[in-house]
Length: 523
Figure 1 (cartoon, rainbow, N blue to C red):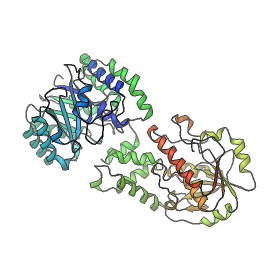
Figure 2 (cartoon, rainbow, N blue to C red):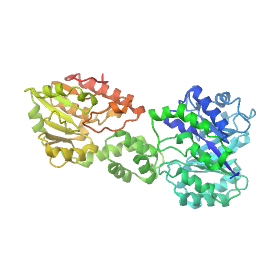
Figure 3 (cartoon, helix red, strand yellow):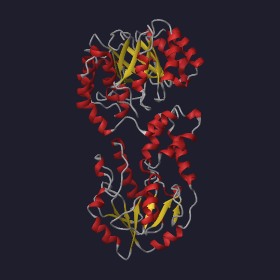
Figure 4 (tube, helix red, strand yellow):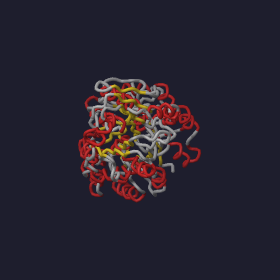
């Protein structure tokens, strides 16, 4: 295995998990730890002109000089590289590599830009950099297209050419097919690299497959500490280096996990999930799965249905506007009929309304909530759950994920069921149109509590009491009552959700008297 090198991409690919904000001290610690571990190639981050200025806490660099300042004391046994996404840096602004501090540039590009990207690779090589050719989503190339790409790469004669499993959808057969095509057609002396993602939990086994391939060609395997990377993450550096005996030293990596990356993981976890599995199965950009998963309104069957509606040409590059349109169309069409709205408005006419959400605060205020609900001038709605200590007049269901649970628990309830039209519950007392209840704030556009409040205000309710709409805490255990199983919220989304809740409640409060009777982060 002397022909194999390990490239660690923690500071670059891992940056998708924390917006590349590792902190200057942590960046230095990670680089020093990788050096001490004996990692062959250290990827220090991105170089991009898409940022306006350099921030020493972030592993995106505006200029080559910004990065060189960080690695001016580089070690002789390591190679230092950075990545440029094609189109994010003008070739004429790239300095000659006279100082030799940055050893190499990895140029990532989409298939449609291959010719222009390889031309830029030639410029980088002429300027003195070791060039890594990174054709993203290599699996999207047919055999003939891949061979033609390799022929073009041979004309550039870069340091390395890569097989890139951008969406984590490769299996061993895919990898072996691409490996044999590359190994048999790539010019001698050009290293062959493999960059994987772990959507199908195959990153490690695929790396093992590549290691076992009979070849005299020098190979590069990408990995990151703790597998840190977007979505499902990457091959774990601390796992793959153990395959090489005492060639690498693992303790510095374990210290980095313990002292630095473990904290980032708690704030914004990465790793295997059903959403990442589905994105790989459909071979589409993982941000589509993340967008739908972050909604917290869909079952995975629903996500599967939405992915099946996507056109082939939209799968490889994330188009937020496109997935938004599909999502809202799906929700509106799922069960678009509306009926018996007047029956609800008649029952709440001239009344005050109590909204009971499933926040943890209702555990401590159950007696007060039950007493208020019993007031003769009060109509109560529980949101997406059956409230055992206070059987509400209505159960409002606006979230598809709650369908099955509500169907089961409603059998023993005397409450009247009101569902939003995207929820498939047979014969509810009333059904309300989804499209009329969503709001303009993306983070909470179809939040169930807000949809109910919008309906109540629109129906003319003058005074609304709210219990259990607590907002979201970074401590997941604080987010839901014992009467309700909660959805996991990513830390990065919590501030946006709380702000969205506050903004929309603030706007609705101008039309009705809205009062919180339990503690809340919603202001």
